[in-house]
View (cartoon, rainbow, N blue to C red):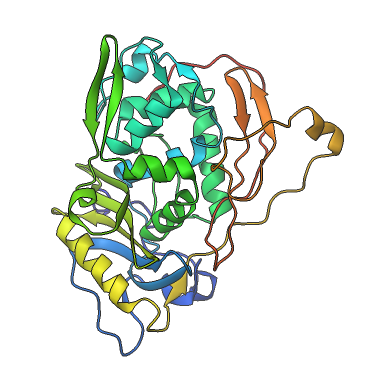
Length: 361
């Protein structure tokens, strides 16, 4: 019988030689370099400790096990939508979006929000209402999920299937500790992503003025060098977390999934282990590079699609843009090799002009 929160196919299905990131990462148990003291014990069903600078996976436990991601999936939502949406675009959320269940920032169906406000609240206070409002701004739920799954495919985050932009539990939705590390590493290459995950407090628009919101990532206040990323919890997924911290010029990523208790102390100890062991021992695998870009369209097709991208949100070059019923959306271009860092390569998804449908859960 499948345990609640565990996605069908939770154990890596590929042969060891075919495992993304290296053959050792096909294992479902603890994976540590020979002769190295294991990381501190944790109640998480799965975790990855990686060096964000080199891409080396330093240690792992069931890294490709597929689990419900809860709100850690919002890291993929932000990574997908930051390059696609104009941060200064005004958004009027639908009634369906503002009434989404679970964690929320408290949206109202009025045109008082910028995309920038919604993305910030998405990552700071895990606003499910923001996730749906952003999907509407991107052309609708179906189109946004297609974009998110395309981003995951490009990253080779093959354990990840997005069925909601919020991470609320839905049949068929999944991710893995390995994929969350890939997503976080790519996100760290975006200026706005780094801003949103590291902001401790901010002012959020209200019908009359504003109110203050605070980041749910407790480690921003307690852990030296914490950059942030995303935590999550649902009654089926239990606790999940992906985070990055930087000390002495080096960045460590830790992701954990299906932790049955409070995970904050465990994440701290796994981070400490990562900093103590980076660069000292053989890696057990690697955070892989993204897939090559698809063939570039003919120059005549590109001519009508070119548009600038906000500086700092394209790691390689300003990509082409596409015009839809909901506005101009820039194609994601995130770069990086195995040493420089993993990111997304550009892709083109032709869209028909349409009205933004009401978001649904």
